Amino acid sequence: MGSPYRGVADALEGAAATRGKLAKIERMAGALAPLSGPELAAAARLLSGSPYAEWEQAVTSVGWATVARAASAVTGWDLETIGASARAIGDLGEAIGLLLPPEASGRSGLEILEVDDRLRALSARRKAAEKAEIIEDLLRRASPREAKYLVKTLSGGLRVGADLATVEEAIAAAFGSPREAVARARRDSGDIGETAAMAREGRLDEIRFRLFHPIGFMLASPIENAEEVAGELSLFAAEDKFDGIRAHAHKSGSRVALFSRTLDDVTAQFPEIALALGAAPGQFLLDGEIVAWKDDRVDSFFRLQRRLGRKAPPADLLAEIPVAFVAYDCLASGETPLFERAWTERRAELERIAAGGGFFLSAVRDAATPAELEDLFRAARERGNEGVMLKRKDSVYLAGKRGRAWRKWKKALATLDVVVTAVEQGNGKRAGMLSDYTFAVRDGDRLVNIGKAYTGLTDEEIRKMGTRFRKITTARYGPVRAVAPEVVLEVAFDTIQKSTRHKSGYALRFPRIVRIREDKLPAEADTVQRVEEIWRGIQGM
Image: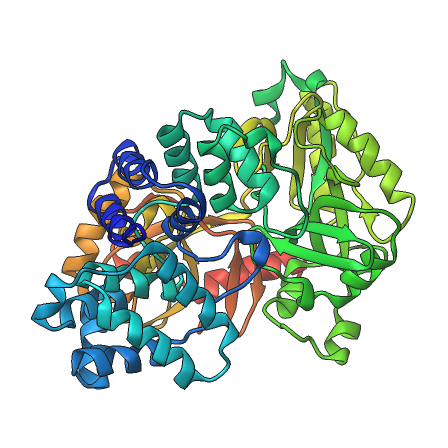
């Protein structure tokens, strides 16, 4: 008899019930430690929220309606009741767990490999009825807790305040492996399951690098002025900070894959980049930026925005808004990963690969003094870019981490006082917290939305604001709460553009919260006329 799936569900429930990261790691490590082989690999993947390894690039492709129909057949409740319960609780998995009949609590439950096999079978089924039959069979034998996390897995969000990095640390704790060795193995293999199995056997160093799976991006720490790095400038190389979409470009033969910072495959959205890279010689993994391109230079991000989300952009849009890939790092060449090599070595390899064409290469400059860095910043802005990136010449590439080896310098264009109109739960470590705020400006006697922000406040501030927002919630639409227009925020942003996405007619680029304006009433918030003044200033009108 195989190991029960109950252990995975219990670990996820335990992680959801505690705020402390160490406690979450302990819960998950406890579930992994008794397992081995295929069971361990499957459990590690399920704790991460998917039955699939990242390199498989597969999904179960199950919609809300399919899950609800299966749940209706098992629970006896109609679709309307299931939908109302899910909306009231804010989570379909939890609702279904509560709606299961009383005898479900005494079920012996499912086995790990059984769940893995059945969930994997979903991607091979094309008809919704066939998918519903598999889900129904699982739910009929699942305990309420197992059903809850089965549905959460199918919905693509466990929401337990843990992520892949937490599971990596659980693997390290369970099998006494160095944390960095586990992270490196998962990065190279694209499979948290394989990583767990090899960690148990003490064979992490046998894992080999493979292309074509999403890898975390190295992130930079912000600086506010050139003086902050005055004593270190000789250690850094400077590049323009481009205003586009960060992407990793994987290439082998004619095959190309582009992964965004959100780890989504966006290759089909940019066929001209895939075609150009596919024609280039060699095998490689590059870090760079997808940008709108016009007259041999980077064009406005707001033009690029019209290309985003188009899985099959029409020919007229491709012609109207051409794009290009600007590379600034080389993470693998041939079958050799370069993450642990110094930036200078990676840059040299990037320049060698660039000779084959297919992409543009970022320019590298040096600044010996803060004044020279100021000059580089101004020149970058004149070229239409956001600012300056500084990279230590001896820095390795820390996938998925933010550090001081890379710095970014950009300046906010202006700030606005806005009113919060809606809130929703965040992701990752802020799952379960109301951390994403939609905000508006005044237009006469009404409020019109202009953007959404989810950075700038501390966790403690978000917790306090969450309590306040729950008290002033006026309606709920799935995960979104409409709130009474009482809270005023000051938000900064990099630029502004006309847009049909918001009722204000404008959109802010990179909005972030500066502070909560407890000293201001909603009637004192900025107006759409003020927004237009800022926009006209940008246009030179």
